[in-house]
Length: 462
DNA sequence: GCAACTGTTGCTTA
DNA sequence: CTAAGCAACAGTTG
Image (cartoon, rainbow, N blue to C red; front, side):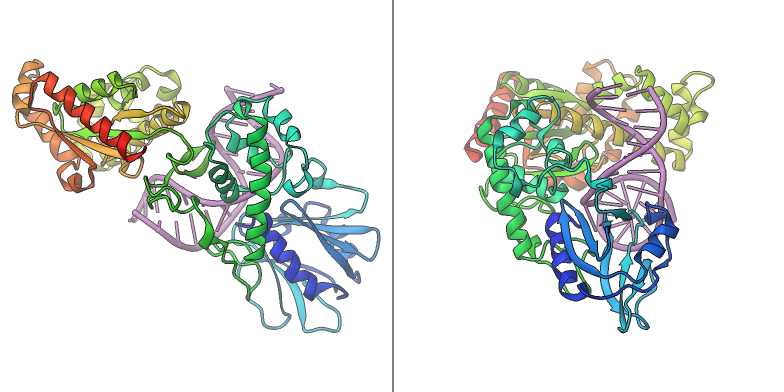
């Protein structure tokens, strides 16, 4: 995952091992990584010396002893190692540049083959052209402010925009938001100049501290065969989801998706508001409880309503038809769905996964859109949809009078509805609940139970 | 055993 | 114009 500190570590490593070495003809194993004409790249590098190595953002720049330079971007998994000519791993090797009069050479390993390299004249900025300054080189927070004021996008997305400021990737963007105590979901145009100053200060602090620790080692990443960074031990939110926040000790670190990227944050420290998941078996009083949370000032979401709305959404139907053409004859036929759900276990699994992921996506969107507010989300199949780590707290609703409630609602197929209970994994996951509400009481009593939970939560997150 | 997820960026599509 | 989704690819996790 090389981000700026990891790339800087690589730069330092290579500087001590590469300066003054003369390149022999490069051997290209994966030509897709070379973004300038390959023959120019190969002949251009042959016989050249590296005089110095620079870094701009996450790019490495090898200055050669002619008027050219080589530029590398490691992307997700790229690794530049100095290895033995005759004894190096061939696995995932994309490029090898042997040194003259030396047993070693420069190897570019890249499991995912996303990395790129360029051979360009010194006056051709190539991919560096659009790159913004690093936080170390921006001295006026007004520079950030002027960019952020122009957009309604979440601040974290702006931090990842390398054309405004370069060097923050997914890990450090999350860490910087945490250090500034701002929500990653906050609209960039809501930020103050003070926020921008905090972003600059904390970006410098965090990146410098990470460089001191030779970057972070997450997953398999290493700066060289012999170096692994240790900044992962200082991360406060990234990869910490589900753990108690190490600063406030009040709530767990949460993780959700923001513009396609995993985003970790502390709901308390970063003032995102808390997210409640309300679940329970059928006719267990979830809706009533959710309504009472609404009366207490929570914004609410219902998975059942969400699914209902999805079925009248043309975009969703189009997607559904692409995935499950057999349930359209020619338009959506719900009887076919229920038939298949009963008789075809493969269909059932696929279909449920599909719907669950849609609901989860919508719930995620709801939480992000309601940044800063307290939220209560009613999700009957919370456990089935694997959403137990999705909320600050989860609340289970329970009743002894399920059948009566179903009768009161005028349900006809009670047996069928009860069989549904076994599907939602409630009993199996009951121990994961933070609160359990027994809903068999008068409405006023139920309301006061909700009020006392609200008070308890307020107390915990004071 | 399959689905989902993973550090990045730039291009295509709506 | 922007915004979202995908593509490049392969390995790991639940």
